[in-house]
Length: 191
Ligand code: ITT
Image 1 (tube, helix red, strand yellow):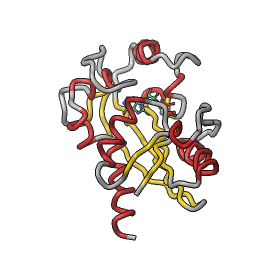
Image 2 (tube, rainbow, N blue to C red; image 1 turned 60 degrees about the vertical axis):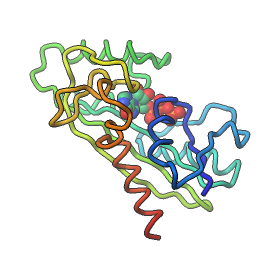
Image 3 (cartoon, protein in one colour; image 1 turned 180 degrees about the vertical axis):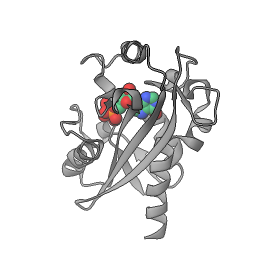
């Protein structure tokens, strides 16, 4: 089954493509002629995931999925959450985002956090949403070079290593994204 992966984040593409193989033949928005930036103007992960997938689906008619994800830090009342990509400004700079997060957490004892993913699957005009969460903690300094975004600062529960110190294969066994994708794959298998 051909599926359009509606993201321009290469880190997400690497993880999602590995999770979708070989059930789906995955292509990107450019390959169906959608070259503009995908809109994400909603206030929630759910709204943004559906908006991105529908934007591409409305233009190509193929089954589409989009992932909207965020890092929720308890001591910050769930921030940066839906604003994770541009926490430190419109430049979407992961280094600046991590520095801002570390500054915001200075003096806080509670470092607990969670990554949350919502995957929207849009087929024949209908959208379905799948959720995944992984709990963990924010480290005191970045560690590792793998992955993307906040991975160097996030250690999942029960692990000493950050996500950025793990292979994609290992992260894909436990991550928020992998859990949401497992729910989607289960849905596709059982329908
Ligand atoms: P697309 O909208 O094109 O998919 P994006 O990077 O804008 O790409 P989001 O709007 O979902 O995606 O932004 C989520 C941000 O949260 C992302 O840019 C990272 O900074 C962070 N993030 C999401 N998942 C992550 C993960 O698995 N590891 C580390 N950081 C992650």
